[in-house]
Image (tube, rainbow over the protein chains, first blue to last red):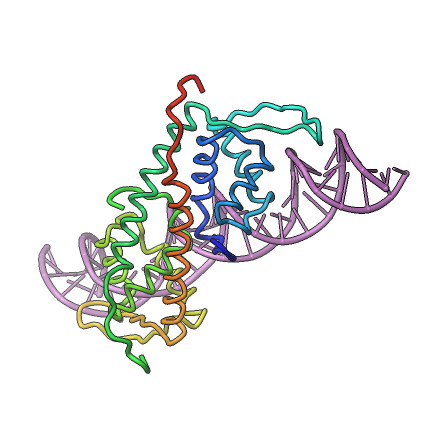
Length: 117
Length: 117
DNA sequence: GCAGGTACTAGAGAATGTCAAGTAGTGGTC
DNA sequence: GACCACTACTTGACATTCTCTAGTACCTGC
């Protein structure tokens, strides 16, 4: 999303995006935010990302390690657990099926515009 | 979705689906539920659909009329207002952009499985 | 010490499906 | 008429998850 996105559409997806980004490469929280924004989600901020990361950790999908930083506070690195990889695979499948079903409906042609309803 | 779907994924989408179905054809509430289920959303029930329809009506996107039924209680028919058509068009655009952004990330290749995570 | 940037935490709030329970109108059967 | 099944609609409590906001803490440079 190059601009503001609908928060509701992001629900259920944000965690999937996070899992995928971290499956690509272990990252610390702040970096995850930056990578997410670089990926097109410019208006997703820390306030959303950290709680989501925390939830995923609580669910056993992510594990963390604290690494001191020479240029600022310590960084909390996140990476997928085995359960996290499984959740990612399962989530990708669910996402695909979800998209297929939604698009099956939304791609159906509509009748000609009926001005005046 | 032929089976249980993730409720979070449906947020923000259900109203779009409803708008589209009703743009295809005016329908009464119960019929909308049936059409939605026929379209693959078998586990979306009245309890979700009616409040969503009511919200769309309150937002001026749907208007209703009550039609007596010869075989049961009166039926409440819903159809799109001009604002509803506009919301549908806008929502379709937002959905497409959302999907594109998400898929851009999820389709990126992942490194080989690193067992032991 | 202060300012700015990095990095993280956390609670209140909003939105929207889900669940569950219920009401009401017909037709058929007893 | 009463009851049942099916149709058709209403509604409030609840759960989840993002958003917003405010704050803390650690470095570096001035």
